[in-house]
Length: 178
Image 1 (cartoon, rainbow, N blue to C red):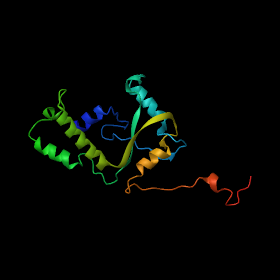
Image 2: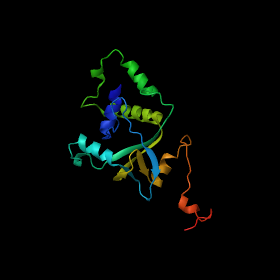
Image 3: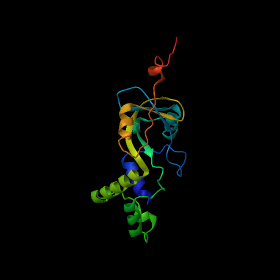
Image 4: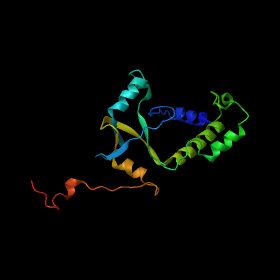
């Protein structure tokens, strides 16, 4: 069953940044960053991890694209998708090797696997998008998200939104003195 995810993620050229196979997602807290673009900022440790995994040569994975999402707290784990469970049931008598994606898989199989992958991602995340990185300068444990990415993630009504106030915009109102 994992071959569906593996195949789709290879096709998308995705690399897990999690701590292990059992914990594939890297969880960072969002902070707002200034900018009109769609580029995020990440901690330097992520660049270090990528450099280590790719022997200091990131030229083969350029541009660096990251999935940014709001995890669904009710996600029970893989496989949550009914289509993946149905697929697994049809193949339960076969061994894992025959379920793997062949080099020569046809377009129809690829389309089916991609649909199952998309269904799983839509269950795993309340909302997600993809973004490139502008720099690796963010404080550890945080991801800098510009407003356009934030708006994209908050389109879904199921995503909790927390509004904050910029202290600089209210200091005159509360009697701030220099």
